[in-house]
Image: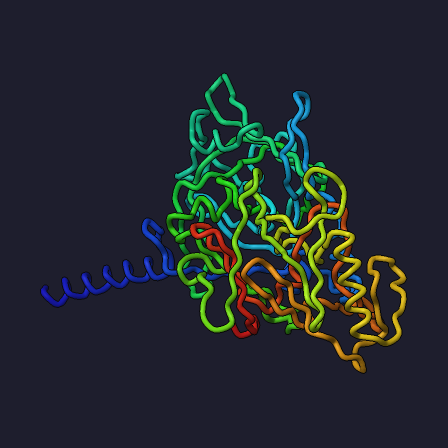
Length: 445
């Protein structure tokens, strides 16, 4: 009998151990949780089209990048048309999470230019077609709608309203490309899978349960995972659990198709050690976007001082705080026109060699090949942080015989895009308000 009881105890403990090794609730700070960031053009992505060449996929990425840059602009709220100040509706990376109990998987766009986490929900008054099953909140044991006086509802500001019938918080987001999502602000358990095999669950996370969604959303994803700096974003809601820290390491475009980029939440997401440089995050009136201050760029030994647009008038101005945003969802880097002209001129002069024309007219400085040309070191000078960019960060092969400078001029907001961030461990510390860069081989990280 004693032997039988010991066996029962052994198997009971084994079951408990297996349960917690595969999945646990993060009620305290987590050391770290690492999961995949899936490039939308990788073979792991549902957007991947094997019939397209890599250059065709790149051209689409460039068009999305230019559209996204155009969408990063101020949008005024009028009494007849409620819109967010600055919100983007897309991105270049996807992330797997689950919502509900039992957890229902969701492949969402991981977007550092947006705050709200949302997914399509039943009943669907007006939903776009999606490949994944649409989330049914009635089947989740932990789902709740949030009341109008809930703190998260207040965080919506002009984007929220109250259903007078049942005191339920209603949200409506209109994105820069006029896509939209409309539904109930709710809460449920969100689960993030981990590369180490241990899923981590976070109870009571606020998200949008969208009952009316449309525009340019694609059926291959079921919603957006906001990673911006506003109070409703994933990283802000998890701030007490992850210590306000997350980081990512983006693979170069030339990496093996079997590899994937990674995002790390928690203390393990802190970026430190040899080669690490840090620059302050600048608080702006809109806290969604991550603003940095760029002081200038160097091409070899030639320094080019930043020129932007004054906040008061459209004229060249010296570097102002928060003059550029860092965004993983924009492929290219965009610089104010006058500053761009100076950087391009310095780069063209330093390289020498014969330039050629981009037939798509997307890029201004192109060469048929870089193999016989000497590429100078280009350094992005942020306040307190000199980030030395490699050729893969500033040039991209857009056709078989065409290589172009991957930065463009803009009349809008400056953006430090994801090509410039590849093979850097980029860390966000939202408690100490800083972003750190560490040169890293992301295929080994």
